[in-house]
Image (cartoon, rainbow, N blue to C red; front, side, top):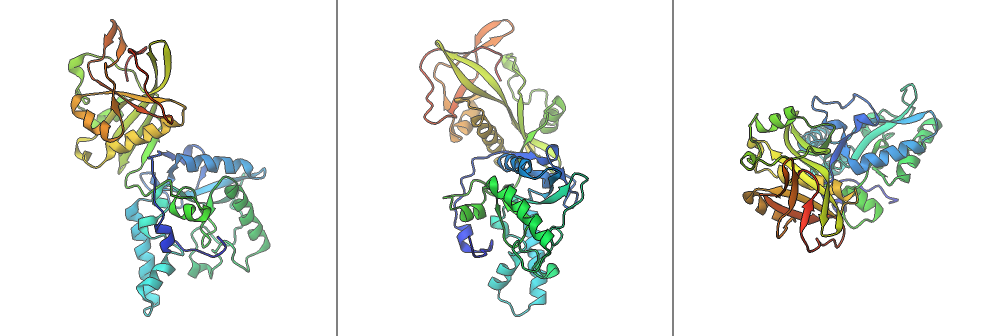
Length: 381
């Protein structure tokens, strides 16, 4: 785009969103992080996994001695709305003759309208450059300088900034553009991938990420204490103790936190499945649970979809799970199918037919579960 298209432009909101539930990741394990926007729950440090992967590639493209300094990623929709309304109120007080449309456009130079905000989708990042000693490079303004404060110098291509600052902006832009991110031209520090603004800027047919109220994050670990936090210490949180079936621990975990408390979880583990003589590449889903007080808000769907999206990226052909009869309708709505004939699984005392419903979902394009007796050559998930 050669013109400056603002976030308030109807063309931005017109793009559809095809969010497949890609999970979020905490960037603090991978990037240098400033404390400017730090919050008590760490939400600011979360981004979609695909965005973080691109930032890590961009950092590798920087000259020796420089690295990215992450300032802010995910912003809850309620906070985004508060920022927008606060800034718009200041503009309204300073410009009492402006129409609401003009106020909205002016506010969107600095804060995105909440309904399409890239930050609330985990798709946008505010960042700058630092040297190896952590000193910020001269970028012409501070990060988050408003158009009023900076007299427009916050615009990426603003005239009149010092040559060193312009060169540093170009250096940042070259690395981020090379990995597919786009800049919001009124803020040199704001870059995004996969949101509606990115879709408009790149000509993509749809956005990949939409706003999330409670983002699903990949967990560094998942312990018995975490399960107790979700279940309230229930001794049989999955209601399957009566069957006496032992299960495996999962290797990859996804969770949702509300105000710092873990309220939902789903886990994945590789499942060595054979159908006849054929060995399938299968991702086993298990440990799906939502805190009692949080049910009915779509959190089970969110953690399951995040796990499935992650499993697709591993090259698995199928997803597999076992569930109680009353959970079958939920998984059907999420695209899972019942496996006729069930599945035999390993147990300490030998091989048994799993007493719960067996369900599968295709992860690879056109994948169809083969006919024949199915066996899981491990404990179930």
